[in-house]
Length: 196
Image (cartoon, rainbow, N blue to C red; front, side):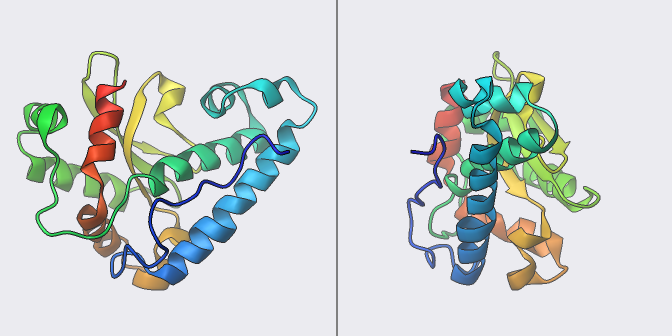
């Protein structure tokens, strides 16, 4: 049995439409992420990394192993943070309070986060993460980058690799980023924040 397996989505492939199409989910989850998981399992076989949790591999590995571990972790967090689209979708509770305290308002946070994703050159990720005290930060990370490598807890991420949006949005990355707010499951993000 392989150590890591493709995560099961907590929603149907078409549940995120029209924000993300079932076709994109099929390719992105079923092919891209499956490929990273398969490559990671092959890379760690017979090494000390085979006994480590995914987050530890991401902080210790290098080269191809890091690329596949980082992509697996990033995509797991990405796919598990969504649910069906809804209007006026906003965080509540301690996370909402922290966002307002840190960024001035939820709307200002959204602008800064989308800007981080829209201006990242090439492929990668934009993250909202926090430190142990709950201080929030927005970071741009490269292809396999994850805030755990900086000692932070990853909360929310938007994937700006073209495979995440090109079938649905072509080259309109900012449109894709702005649409994603409709499908963020703030209960999941809030739990990540409170369990840091």
